[in-house]
Image 1 (tube, one colour):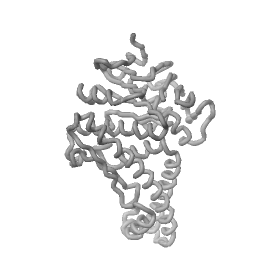
Image 2 (cartoon, helix red, strand yellow):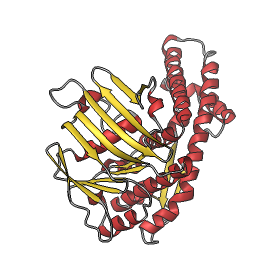
Image 3 (cartoon, rainbow, N blue to C red):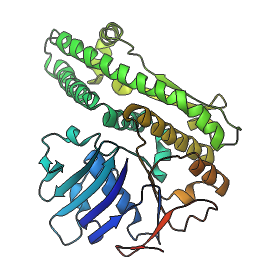
Image 4 (cartoon, one colour):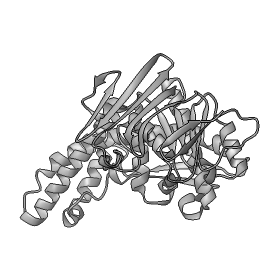
Length: 357
């Protein structure tokens, strides 16, 4: 699939801008703070219905204005489509002219994989970012996952509130059995979705990483959980009930799960260099491309923010040579300058985009 055109009105530093992309490699370059990343953010907005940079949607509206509109026209193997996002005092999303009622309804129309410099924190920081990464990727392939995840999180919130009431108001513990049953039921569903997705990534990632690193590194992934099934989770909740009441929250569950990446059998977030972390993250993104392609029958769009600064020239070339039949939109402060590689270039300056000849 690929995006033909994107239209921006009062989005970030763009007043009115229309950009046409080719279906292969597109390079958007310019000085810092000119609006390059804003273009990727607008595509992400049409794919997920939200920004990857902020939760405050008013920040997306151009300074001094009170509304924004972003439209993305895309082509899939079986259809054309358009996603339109309007944000003012509220947000309204339409798909092919039909307004959607739930955010999950926009997922799967424009499939993307995005790499930003901040993504290295997914491996370096705590498990919250890694769970969020999994949730986002699974969600665009399995909207039912988002539905069950929301049910799990709502039940978790209710259980946590009741734990505090037991502690502070000496309420009966009997109602915890109801929350435990529901939490374990939804937790098992979430666990199965995540393990299935990680297993598919594992099938792809070592071969991809080996090619990018010229056969110098072996990469493996392990999903870490205490909640493999409903009965296991129920037992764990009962076992830790006293501790949960003391603390006032649920101390174990799929909301605490994690995945660990190893390079040459060493945990990367402990022993990996910055370059190894970056390359591992790129391998993870390329594996996502392959998994999504297997699922939907075509490659998603690949968005690479500040790509040129993240890799040396050899790894950059190896990475791009491993991408086939994929629309790629790259931002950077410099031109790409790779021999024997065809691509279109766009220069960005002060909220204006100029296609280069």
